[in-house]
Amino acid sequence: MMAQTMQRQDVPKEGVLHTHLSAWGASQGLRIPKTVCSQMGIHIGDELLVTLQDDGSLVIRPSHESFHRTRRTTIGELFEGYAGDYRPHELEWGEPVGKEVW
Image (tube, rainbow, N blue to C red; front, side):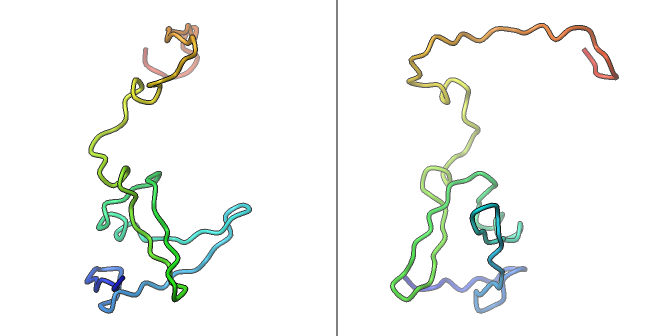
């Protein structure tokens, strides 16, 4: 796969972005600048596909499902196929105790 030349504010002309591998709990993580995420059309929580190439390089791209998402998932879609007996109902939280508006 050939590297695409990106002409972006945070990415140099040759398409190389320098970042650091950081500790994230028991895992490691890469930071991607917000502007690059915006230009890629990805958001926090999106699923990404990471492919290790034969030359040792990584290719990171949005997964098909999350990349083509155009709206939020509904609660009905989240529980589609759920066989439990849960029925949504309102809860009584009592009287306001601070400055919340009811």
